[in-house]
Length: 174
Image (cartoon, rainbow, N blue to C red):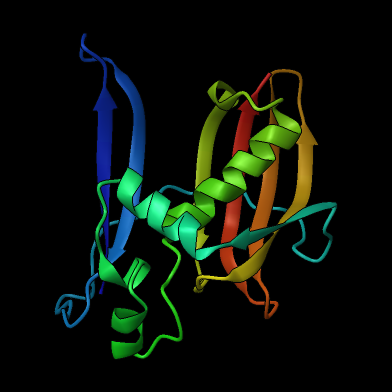
């Protein structure tokens, strides 16, 4: 079952800073009512066939350990080959949020001079798995420049050519 939850992040004065939607997979849990609620709509590129920029990234085993521990992790599926094998996976699984974070980092370096404060909207959908010691390709599909902001549409493809992060969208303020 995929569970999505919404966070409203507020500052000390109670003013809304941002809204965050996160999802997680619940193993062995069924959803008897079929699920409720809707996610906010995000813009989509005019096509997913045209890659206008790309960057290859290698996910070393060390990157998985560092990310897991830096985020108070400790879920064995991301760090233990033995656990990964016990659930039928070939190797530890890169956290989906880590895959998205690396893509956003690289897009921000390239198109926002590395200034993460310029990221106004971020959306992405996990569609597949990335494993330790595998490569991905971050692909920019479309770039729409406006006077006050730039919209970037991207995807991440694993080394087998499968889209593992789709519907990627970043709005960068000028």
